[in-house]
Length: 336
Image (cartoon, rainbow, N blue to C red; front, side, top):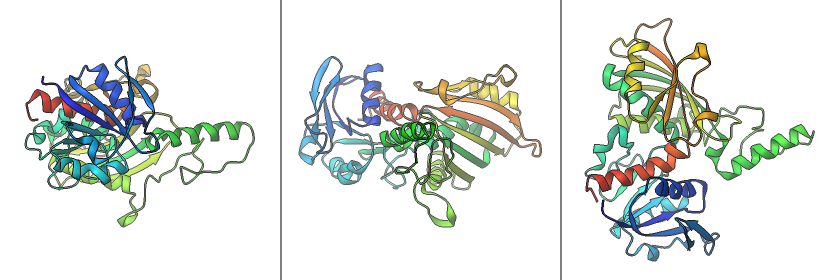
């Protein structure tokens, strides 16, 4: 593989830090790497691969000579993404800014990696909940054709960033000490509670998080006729998302057939022995790049439907790892 000049935008945040960790773990080749962040973080020191780096403020000028910029998400993507692309730097973006734009491929390498071949210098990584859903169902869709999905998500507080983690920790302490609660990051108390409200409300009383999953799944699978209903819920879990998934197929597919297909699928781990208390859980998925699937069972009222449960680390495969895998795909295929 060729060695490139890289930049990580948002290097001091949770996803940016995880991107750096994944680059090191996967031994991604590079000639140089820049650590970029907002003006608030400029000047900070970061340790990476045994060296100390000074964080630079994100401006257009710092991208001169950069071959690939990995955007960890947030305002920087909106402010700089297209301009950096115009400079000739390939942008791999983890935010929602460009995901649904026609000229931007939306990529999960194990699912639709070939769609990145004709990229125009900007590639998007999907929403974490979309990545979990599509990564889990795509092998089954290829076999039997999915025509309807009913999805409920159970999303960890770290999906709302470091502030979300802090709020859960602080509220838990406050409740146990009998102190009053003052929600800030979330709409209501998150400790010992569930909140069926992620992001802003949109048409038909769906949240933006829910519509993201619907539209992104349609785009990745190139199937806008697939009927998808989503309920997105924030849960008092530190890290790793889970999903309850109902799938209705064009062709009949037994639970055993589904297990065999998923067991052979890349980056999918089958954990499906409920009688032995074996099934996916956030606490065991954390730190892994795999998608864990279990509780596969026939629907009691529809011969063409299955129910299943899936879980993964949303900061790893749901964000950082998928972003780095897109870079690896471009290098491996010489698409850069």
